[in-house]
Length: 238
Image (cartoon, rainbow, N blue to C red; front, side):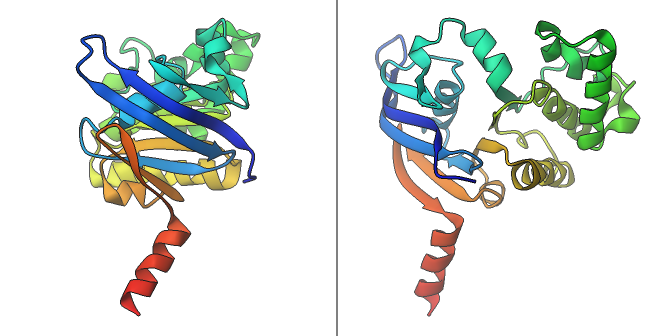
């Protein structure tokens, strides 16, 4: 990991159309390349809204998000930008039920230049990475909930994204499946150097990240690295 910001949010505000909900208020945040960050907060705190703005899925009412120093508001083709730069993992898997795991993983690749054979080979490699090689020919209905989420992670990696954004990726999983998905995120971060931003309400999930940013009522109320937290706890018990 280096100190160069990959993502930078400057004074972000988000007001929903009825004008009565300030989902985000003056949020400023910087995320370095290779960093693993958990966004925490109660329901309605603004964490998913922030994730959507960082991933160019929505536009802020005020402020700006910079991706590699490029303002997202100046990107003419946000769909193309997302498909090339960002992988998304959601609580709901959004796998197509009529396609096999191998075919689902290939979906983001169709806008690229890979041949049919190359797409299939790359999808097989990604399924192997997430421990799903032996389920390549299975449709989502033939997979467990945890297996579906791992296929969704493989699909998120299809176009070699710089950034992985995950919104409650373990929310529908049992403890064993959740641990397997989080182990996979650890591997992507530690061994692949991937930048990961994860939304969660679970403390155990957040503990996997090296930094936790907490939101309350649309504002950042705490921002602490794992090392700083450990030092603070050690000082409190000494």
